[in-house]
Amino acid sequence: MELTNNDKELLATIADLHSVPLGAYNIRKDGKLVSRSVSANINIVTKKDKPGIDVFIKDGTVNESVHIPVIVSEAGLKDLVYNDFYVGKDCDVTIVAGCGIACGTSADEGHDGIHSFHIDKNSKVKYVEKHYASGSGSGKRILNPITNIYLDKNSYMKMDTVQISGVTESVRQTDAVLDDGAKLEINEKIMTDESEYAETIFNVDLNGKDSSTHVVSRAVAKNKSHQVFKSVINGNNKCFGHTECDAIIMDEANIVAKPELTAKSVDASLIHEAAIGKIAGDQIIKLQTLGLTEQEAEEEIIKGFLR
Image (tube, rainbow, N blue to C red; front, side):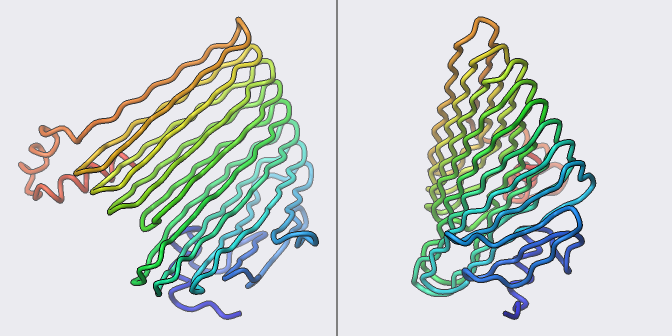
């Protein structure tokens, strides 16, 4: 299957791919494999019982990456994949995912990616996930990713997730279970416009002794869009958990933040923060004195906020 120029632009947006990536990769378009490459330490295998792949990373793999971007451009297609990542002991790797939808008709298009990470002892994983939609069609652009994370003893995962623009509806759910000494960082950036709807749900079980998590969301809601942020942290042992939601609300938008903490150990330390508000007028005025229009000032403030 050939990639069009529009496909290549989508890949650059969602996975920073401007050419064939180094290392292992699996590129998928409209429910079909476009191209795949494996390395000596990273193997990618097509599932036999359902759509998706299994990614196996050998013990001790360091300074390697795997890219698994998805493109949806077929009218009416609702793509579904199950991707499992098995990261061995003592690894330090980067995994880059993302989905780009190019809607050109009145038919709805969507992608649901169920990603499960099994991260073994003492390993570090950076996971980058970007969602983006574009096109002149009136059909809905729907993305409902599910991420399951299992962190073994003293392992670490950093998850950077971004919903850039154009996604009509999305419900993003992340469930994580942490063992002794495991650490999980989640950084979410999301912007909605028009009448778009976005909901994010984070559930983290701090089961292990000295396990910890930081869940941070930065959000901007414009026009008549609606966002819901839910973050649930369960402290089931001696642990530390922190969840934070900072949001800018504009026009007639609506934002709901629902942080929830449950401590089941006297040694659990859990914190939540939530702040929703408009852009401060003095920030806009300051930038206007530098020659920017009000709209340009707002755009610069938003860029800085979501950086």
